[in-house]
Image (cartoon, rainbow, N blue to C red; front, side, top):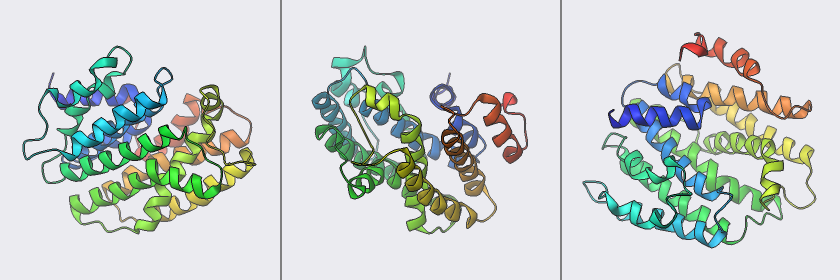
Length: 277
């Protein structure tokens, strides 16, 4: 099985939400976005791992960041990443263990931008692990959500511009990433608390967090609506629609969207039966 086909299988296993818009992208852009998503997912799984202590998480994340910054024109040697992660290979998921392979997916003309974004995010995640994700104020929340999500919006804008020259509002791009991330925080709040992490600022309840999410989703909507017809618009509509759907479900007392909810939201956007994808 070639690397990209294998990557798509891992992508489908880790996030059907993003698998659907990614596989619908044109060749070249598809590989670039898949590379970025899998690299980000690889470090995210380390940050959220329930069995790793915070110093170990920080060490692994900084090792990945350092390795990415030491890249050469030929990418990374086979053992570059594995040497840094091999002490816990039995605990880490496949998507994290194989991060070197995901770095090789993107076209050479854009791959270094993805490595740079992943390195920066891994380093920021290491910092937040060291302080146990202590978020006291809305300013702290802004810092964290930029670290792990706003920067994703900026990278996506760079990918659209690289592929076909699509220009975007980069301030709104930060809101796009933040909005999706905060909805995930709301959905996973109970699970996060069970591992000793609370992303809600002091004194905030779900209603405060929902308002924060809606402010950023409004920016995400403006970002998406300003995109011209084409692959960037097709991509962004899917996670944005699901984010709004999830937030509405949470506010109505549901734990998450059901599969039938997801189908009802997504199939009109993509024009095909999701079961066929």
